[in-house]
Image (cartoon, rainbow, N blue to C red; front, side, top):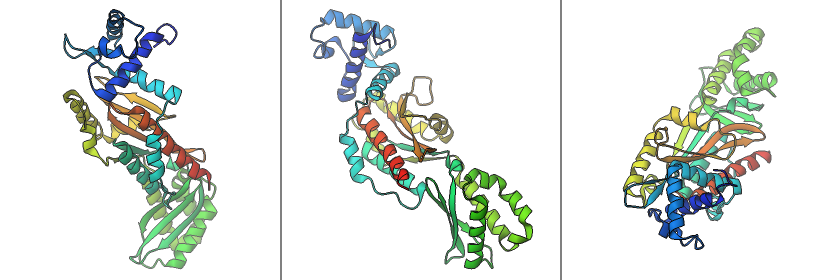
Length: 338
């Protein structure tokens, strides 16, 4: 909406959506009069008629009030993000629940997504899609009691870890030799470079790595699985999406749950997030009746994932945007302390 030519209309949209989020009551000239006391009821009715024709409101019943459309919610959320009008009450909950980053980068990100879902009462989506760009600083293969091994790859954004199997005859000394060899070959390179080139390098060095060639190839397979794009959904309070919702909004919540069942749709919607941004689903969109606030997770300048909160359109955007903004910033801060 053009802010210069339609300042009053924009203010009406923002106040109307704000009231609808709080009270779930249809928007009328009477309900808006408390915010616009200098405008007559007739003027407000004319403005509402104009805004309805512009696509910001729709009437559920001919004689009833109006409710916001996806277009109105987009205007409302854009205003919050533009002006950083964020309610830090919710942030304090996240601060209280925030813990120092653990050894595992992936498990830490998943844990934070769960905490974010818990304090906002919205499903949190974590899409890992940039781990292949991390720079390798150290590699350790640590034998475990059950004949498996723990693979630790220290990177410029934290440690990636996973279990891997060991062939018979592979002992601690062999694991150390393999670890040292991999560090010598790939320190300072990206994980993607290592996965793409490890086979050729193994062939080229031949006899030098004969004792642990299979072990190194196994490392490559484990890392290949780790860096694949993955979608992890945390929904700590699933019934909260239905609290205080009208019958129509319950349908919207069902559409959100349906959206969360389709990993491909989620990945397409989230993975290219560049900044703290939002999506409000229209009638014909994948996220029909829902909204999504998303932000990239960047550590030491490397985008490694995207984190999003999903829910019905009528939610507390300011609190949720504040919580998401804070947690993403904390992840980056922790990465910068390395």
